Amino acid sequence: MARKRRFYGLIAWLVFVFALVFALPTTGLLDSLPSAVTQWLPVDKVKLGLDLSGGMVMRYEADMSNVPPGDEQVTLDTVLEIIRRRVDEFGVAEPEVEQIGDAGIVVRLPGISDADRAKKLIGERAVLEFMLVDAEGRLGKVLAKAAGYPAYRTILADVYDLGHGIYAPASLKEGLEKMVNDRGLVSDFPGFRLALSVEQRLDRDSADYEQEIAQRLTDVYGSPVEGYFQIYLLDARRPIKGSDLTDAQYTREHEQGLPAVSFSFNYTGAEAFREVTGTHVGHQLAIVLDDEVISAPVIEEEIPGEGIIRGNFSVDRAKDLAINLRNGALPVALNVVMEDTIGPSLGADSIKYGVTAALVGLFLVMGFMCFWYRFSGVIAVVALLFNIVLIISALAIFGATLTLPGIAGIILTIGMSVDANVLIFERIREELRKGARLAESGSIKPAVAVATAINAGYDKAFITILDANITTLITAGVLYVLGTGPIRGFAVTLAIGIMASMFTAILVTRAIFDYRVRRRHMEKLSI
Image (tube, rainbow, N blue to C red):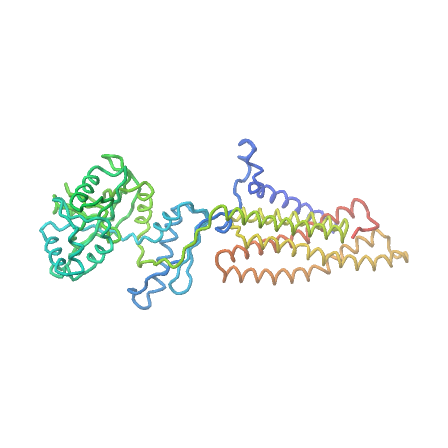
């Protein structure tokens, strides 16, 4: 029996050393050590949740109005998977994407620094199509028809044909969007549709031809034009779909080295692309993303199943577009219901206050245990510190995320950990009183009475401790399964804390007591 307990004691201290090694990176103590030392040590730190590291949370509602009855859940599952792939490639640590209700989606992105870019990446449908631009004068007829409607007459008064295209100032955006979405205007040309280019905003990096267009618009419009749209009529009878893409990558185009996106088609898409480009050399081919024309280059020769999308992109925009094209288009549109951004400073404050609360609770518990149980209380304090090290190392090893409720879970675990020690110590006290009477009568030696009391105290308290912790562990499991976001963080730290407290209360403190009894043959226990 003594050899078995010594073995358990050895296991306890080996676990402590192992846990300490994995907990050290989170403390930052390894940062100042030379790389020759740290290369042999783990580097994973505890990941912080959105409420501690800052970031953003967005809630969307999927537009299911055009989804066939019975296909809603399948469609939503597809949306969730596409969003997960997008944010994974975006490089966010520990993103959370989950369904809320029948058509709701919540996205949590901890540590995100560019909120606008993230919103664009997630909310963009990324429906890519290639369509021929009308080259037979149909657009003029469609706009002439539109001019017959009072709602569009005022808009068209500021739309200008500059010889190589029809343009309008960006200030007319709302009216232009209403006009191009009016399917009745193209009823004379079945299979064709109106479309706007992406808005071209002018800045110092704008190309010369963009500056020239803006200047010509300014001349005819009569006031400065800082942005513009081009109006297109597209042949939508045989569009080439982006769903036939096999890959899309960020690149730079050869002429000026500007950001662009390269793409390649599968066999079906490549054959369609080759046929369209081969039979329409000299025509414009519009590259349409989410109903907006990114660009409309002139086809110079037959193109096989690869190409480059140019569109006056920034580097980030080109990278994000490549991500979305690689991962596929969203089958339905997403409407933003709520969005919230948590700044890093707020997260830092949460950490500071949470850690302060944990330390205050820790010192109060330590003081009480040492006052009430004397040296045995010191042993409980050692186990408590061991418990905290185990929790930190477990969070780092398993890649779990620590949230603000998770810190509350650690604080709760501190109380639960000493609760097990209180049960054991009170049992030991009862057994010591019984042993004292036997020692006084000469039935047993005082040292044997102490050892017997310790053994009986642990044995009799074990079932009570086990039952209490199992019921709490079940509660933590239910919280994790049914909870979301930070609630899951609380459940994780609570579950880890329960198992760690069981280990430290039963094995670690027992190992310390056994060592003292074996080495010192104690005749009196400070408890």
